[in-house]
Length: 132
Image 1 (tube, rainbow, N blue to C red):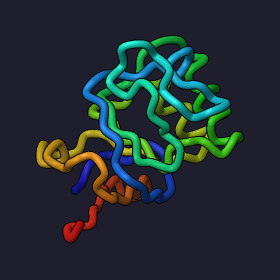
Image 2: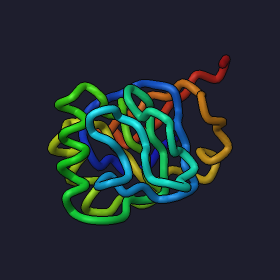
Image 3: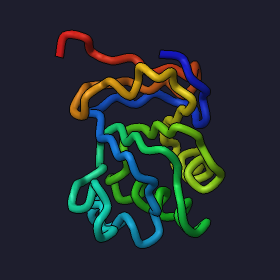
């Protein structure tokens, strides 16, 4: 699936999907890689090593540095997919070296969570294992 590349590189992992935006500042614990925002659909789940798909980021610009801290702690997502990238998440992905894309076609939303996907930020593409 073709989208827009935001942050370079390639990352592969299990798809973790949220219908809600994510705030990395106070919403994700950089020491555990777990979503801690109360009431969030992903509350209690680890984002580490997974391909994290969510509409867009929210909250403080410090969220960019939380994404960087996740990477430094070995707890970052393998890649990020947004419906529409905004500066907080894009900057975080770029400084942390996490592949990121946005603006994928509507059929992306039909992939079930847990599907193994590969994000190619250089090409702005997402591929998936159709046999899984």
